[in-house]
Image 1 (cartoon, rainbow, N blue to C red):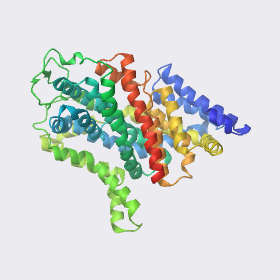
Image 2 (cartoon, helix red, strand yellow):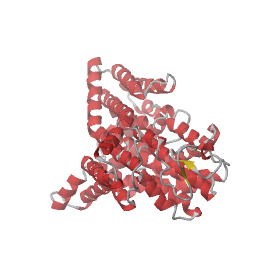
Image 3 (tube, rainbow, N blue to C red):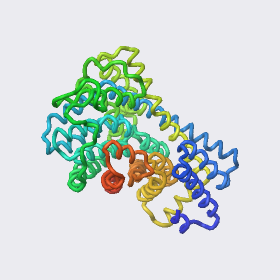
Image 4 (cartoon, rainbow, N blue to C red):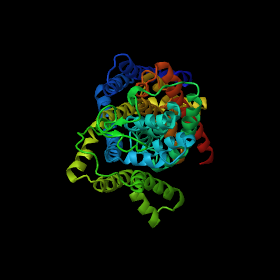
Length: 489
């Protein structure tokens, strides 16, 4: 906000104060009073609108309009993505992918394999769900291969985190795309390109380096022997021995993922090729649409087809329908069980949808009050690169609130006016810059920090040295990748 003060006219002081107070209310309510972000964003929007000069009724109207547009554009995609993730978890598809890659590589290449597996199954899974599924497997692989836990765990966490921050259909990227009116296909294409160096440097490279400096013993969940209980927690249920990792994510772990009662395990694991095709189908369809827009003339018949099948809702719906067969009936699930899995995947995302919706309302109040235009003028006067500005704003809010989603929502709303004068490629890159900034230095006010700490049995200091630094590497490398792409596209 000091940048605004330096570049703003005297008449803009009220908007600067409104923006500071609105964001401060959100930050203090979340971090100090521990208010849920949904309520914090509503109250912060009210303060922002009224102090910024909007009538109270206009503030409410603006907030409601933002909520409606965000849910309409983002909520449906998040729900469809959650359904694919739910079927992937319940059917054992995640186990199938892990078995195929991890069991067939040498110990030296296991960190790279875990990064690739995490990135693949992280496409449809939310970060927390991916952690629940992968950590028991990571710990088992580390023990059986005699590798340091962090050398395998950090690559897996990096793969999940990068996808969570940069690649649709995760909530953060979708919110940024919606707020900035960016093209989803192009953002997906550029996001995947930027994700590669992020995963490599923050995953296997950093994981190998930090594992030599942090002596982290295997958490107690392993018990005394090689066997792990079939419930994924250890000590009860049928044991799994040898190199077979199937079933590791069954039982309580899978119940956490979907929120449904676990009736019976699948009769058989889904095929590897079918699982990969199901996970990648929405991504491929959206990428084909983006490629068609870049290479084919408007009105071309093939481009028209690609425009339809690559529409995000159609692409994700196609993934859900295909998954009902490849991850449902193919593994022995009946219609009732499959319906329960699909329905059970939705309650777990209710909180995320409410935060995203309220964030959309907060963004709209920012825009309608004129704060966004103020930021645009300040950036122009200071000759500050729009991509760097978006990243810096997201970094500041991320450090204050601990929430990557809140950081993305708020930063995207603040820099929205900058997108009006940018070409389509740069707007897509701006969404990625905001997403990269939202991952910067996760610390004690981030729920993900404590999730990782507890699962890996680390102290706060160890978690900062490993997880927090890994997140910072992802954020900085993501910005560098975005800036590099802006030179060539």
